Length: 235
Image (cartoon, rainbow, N blue to C red):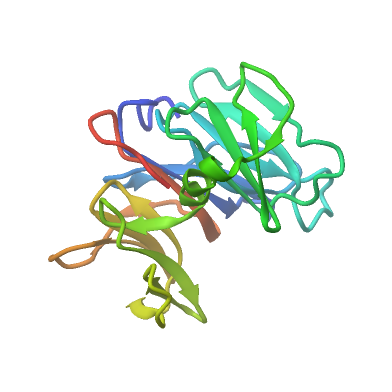
């Protein structure tokens, strides 16, 4: 990411897109737009990136072969050094579907069906454990796109649109039409993809804006955002 964004200082977005060969790789772009830059050049598909709270590490799922339709191996990539490391779930844990970070950045949460495992983030090591009930709310929040601080709702897919689901369990309310892959954009906005565009919408008053970027790959999905060292970043 050097030359495009200063890791851990600038605000940036990391996401999955189809590279020149049609393979799913990780890409990035500064929050204020500009050229999109490729982060990984793997021959196997990648999915579900999640940036650490300090923006220095991205966890993601990586396939085991080029024909793997559901990447299931958990990897972490240090964006400063380029060092990669695979981390393991307990044997027989199942297929991971989402990744998130603990608020202090020391732990990695992994959702497998209705179960959530907690892993120690590299460079530390340790066997993953099922998240205790007392920690489950924090773990679930790491996977969600929350609105407000404190949160009053979360953004969820609804057909081809995005909606807001409130804790009272009422029907979802429309948030953005023809949109997908929402991400919490700092503390007061939500980013999402609409057609070829990256849109950022304030949670409160204000109009949505389009991020001016260039060189974006095809099929953008799996957005994760770091809001810079002056703000707290949340997925």
